[in-house]
Length: 64
Image (cartoon, rainbow, N blue to C red; front, side, top):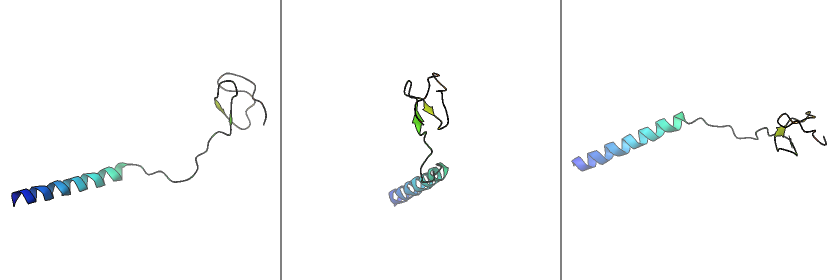
């Protein structure tokens, strides 16, 4: 009898803990994240679409 009660208490504690942890985890919205459309051909640094020079190494960015 005591063993059954002990198991029930353990299951209840585990379920309560899991629910608390799930509430603390931030949920991200599904969708696309903005990613840089261009990268420096010299160093691979992400660049903005209107940048003419790499902000990391100073190389001239080719193309548009």
